Structure formats: structure tokens, C-alpha cells
Length: 176
Image 1 (cartoon, one colour):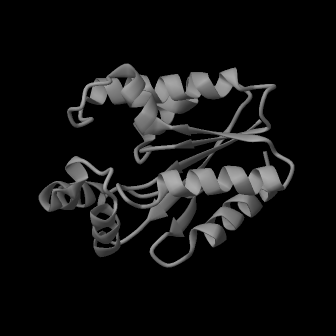
Image 2 (cartoon, rainbow, N blue to C red):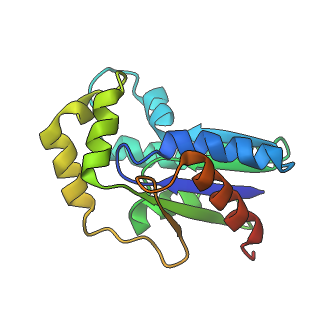
């Protein structure tokens, strides 16, 4: 089972790229599913308030892994997209995957100005339309560094279709 995890800051293109990667993999013969961590969180907490409960995020990461495991035998690949910037966040997902599975991580980057433009153009955005909130989020992630094994893509510099092809090529050529 191919498991690719797409992580990055708010408005880096995680959801858009996650779906594009699933389509790209399907075009290469790997029937794929996408798990959106924000939607998993909302399954656990359907209230309209901002998604700031860290315990709920931990629960959502573990549940996302269980959903991925439940797709075993039904899909050849699963794309999980959400925030997995820290080692702890990655462990919350990885510990719930079957022991012989390995998640491959794609870390997205984008500069604040690109992110701000994307947020302002997206009518579905909530608290991230608050410039101070978004700036604080980007400052907080400033010290986070992708793992050396991650594929790192700057979505402010490349198109989603190019990024999806790059992810599929990398996934299909990464040794177990």
C-alpha cells in the first residue's frame, strides 16, 4: 500500500495537491483515496468554532491512519493531507498504521505573501483570513524543518500539475 502524507502550512496547497496526486496515481494504475485531516477533525468536532483543540488534532491524526488502514485491499494508494510538521504529529499517524506500512512525507512550502493571496481568494476560509492569525501560524512554523527523507516542494514556484507528477514519480521510485 502506498501512503503519501502531504503536509505544510495553511494555504500551501495541501488539499489541492492531495487530490491532484490521487488523480495522477490513478492515471498510473494506482486506484487512490484522499483523506483530508481537516474533515476528519470536523467529524470529531462538528462545531463551527476554530479548530484549535490539540487533543482533537491528535485524535484526528490517529483516526486518519485507521481510515487509511481500512482502505487496505480497496485502494492501492492513500493520500493523507494535513498538518504533520513535527515528529510527534507524524508519530500520531504512523503508530496507527499497520506495522509493515511506511508513510512517505511531502512537505510543502510557500511564502507568506502567496499564502495570504490564496487565503483571501478562498471564500471558504475562516480564521485564516485574519492576517495576524496567519502570520502567527507562519512564524510558529518557521523553526519546523522537513525530515531529510521528505520530498520538499515550493508551491509558490511550481504548478499543482507539476507538483503532482513530481510526487508520483518520487513515490514510485522511493525504495521500501
